[in-house]
Length: 328
Image (cartoon, rainbow, N blue to C red; front, side):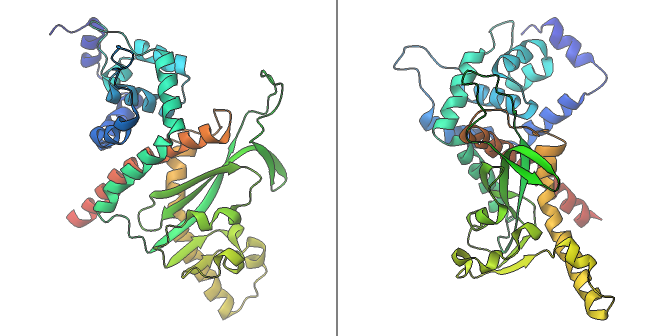
């Protein structure tokens, strides 16, 4: 088969870009067959309209590209035409075919949102590390992070998003949503996700973040008094909630205080695992620092997919780190 000039030029380039490395890693860690099996019952076969739809794996890869790079529907279509790295990832040969258009991608995204399929994708991804026993399930970490949302009223209704609210953190006000996650304390993999408005307190969602197999739960000072809440009294777990910083600073210089400080450091070192998925999704890799859609359901659906792929990346790194330790 003849190669296009762009493919020949791409093959001969001497530097691998960050996009190359990122999409290569996504390709390496993803079992596309497993994910398409989850989606197949809901994906149209084309028998009713007489038109064959875009291949499921192809449109899924295009959707994943959109979410990982924070692109619009039109921007994703343009990226497929403009970027050879993305074309190779989506498996599009412009010599023989055109890329799926923005409307097709929009309909696919709505299909995923309607049937809550991104949550199913997260569960399917987690089934693999569970089989490898990377989920120990004995201890969990709960935490939440704020995602800002556009506060503009330059829209059809001339109003803010009615499902998004503001909250105060320290002395600063934030307008947006919260992503509450339950994380396996050993591996750092996200097993549960809840999206709420920013003004919903972390402690009110903590019980729903547990999978009921835990014996120990860790949380920061925002979850204090969690074990005393009525709905949590019967849960057979031990709570390890961080002491407030102001209370720690006020501890007297005694031997008992030193032991308490050592305990707080130990709890913090375990809770640090919850920062790994936040690092991948929110802070550095996917850079999902702002809610991109209107409505809680759409934004939460996107987060399910992003945290699912964060688990994939963390799985590979977790396995590589443990293999290197065994080899040494």
